[in-house]
Length: 276
Image (tube, rainbow, N blue to C red; front, side):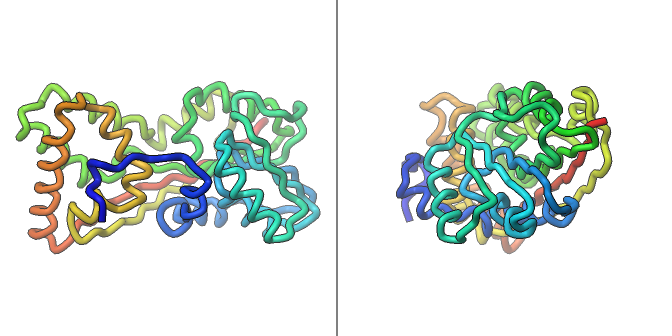
C-alpha cells in the first residue's frame, strides 16, 4: 500500500475504468434518491452531475423507454465510461451531454424532473444552477437532490482539530472549519431552494456510518485519497503537510485502539422542490 502523502490523483481513462462509485459512497445517497422520487410514464428527466452513470442509468432502466433521461456532466472521462455502460446495457432512452449545469441546453418549461445525487456539493454557483433548473422545469416539475450535511465525519474532524493544536498550528483551524461548513444544513439548503423559487415538497434526513480499522487504513483508502486528500492538503502550507498528517494518522490510530475501530457518521438529506 502506497503512503497517502505521496498520492497524486490523475484524471485518466485508466483511472475511470477502476472507479467504482456505487459501493463506496454515492449508492447510499443514490438509493435515498431512488426511494423517494415518483416514477411516471413519459417523463423528461435530467441528472445533474451524472458522472460515470449512477444513478442516471438506474433511473433510465426503472422508467423504461417511455421516458427520456439526460446526464449532464463536464467530466470527459466519466462521460466516456457512462457512454460505454449505455452501449453495454443497450439503452435507448439515455443521452449524455458534456457540459456544465450553469447553462442547460433545454427550452423553458420542457423538463418534468431534475435529480442530482451529491451534485450540489460540487456546484460552485448553486444559485445560478437552481435558476437554470427552475427555467427548464415545467410548472409543477420537481428538483430532487441528495447531499451530505454539516456534521459529516464529525469524529474525524474533531481529531483533526486537536491535531492542529498539538502541531502548534491553531491559526490553521479556521481553514478546517471553512472546509466543514461548505456542507449545508437542512435549513440553509431548503432556504436556497425557496429563495430561487421552489416550494419544498419533501425532505428526509438519514444517516449511515463508515467503519475503518484504524487511521492508517482510512488515510490510505483509495476513495479517501481520490476524493478528499487534495482538498485537505490545500488547506495548509506545503511545508506543514507532512507534520500535520503524520500526527493526524498517529492520533487516528490511538483513537482506533481505544474504540476498537474508527466509526465515522455521515448525515444525509433528500430534498425535493416543486416549481409553482
